Amino acid sequence: MKVSIVYWSGTGNTEAMANAVAEGAKSAGAEVELLNVSHATAEVLKSDAILLGCPAMGSEQLEDSEFEPFFASIESSLAGKRIGLFGSYDWGDGEGMRTWQKRVEDAGGTMIEDGVICNNEPDFDALAACGALGEKAAE
Image 1 (cartoon, rainbow, N blue to C red):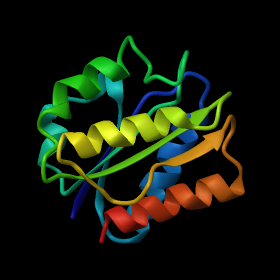
Image 2 (image 1 turned 180 degrees about the horizontal axis):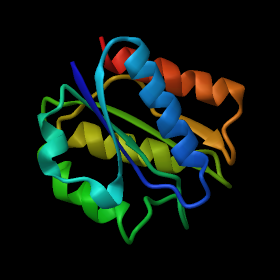
Image 3 (image 1 turned 135 degrees about the vertical axis):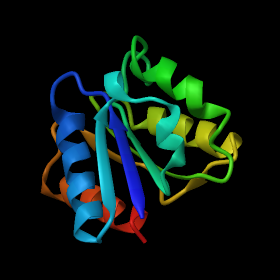
């Protein structure tokens, strides 16, 4: 089982979440590829599960200089793929995650579970949820 984790992090919050996701997937026996979005390519689509992490920016949108262009480049190829989402936010109620999840579902992707979000820095519960997402992705 190969799991690819692609993330963007400006403050380190989403990177911490990505590391917890990776540890969860590794603990469940998956081969894990952990990539900052600046190093990611469409090759991740060959993985058994794709986990994507990005904080909500601006008005609950994906980071627009690197992550949004990457996601848009693979979005039309998500049909039938197992996808997990995670990220932090600083305001609002996490609407950005619901919007992002809908984009995945509209593209035909299969959500492993609802996206994992946390307000600002991930606490113990958020990191545990990320680890559980990684474990579930490795099933």
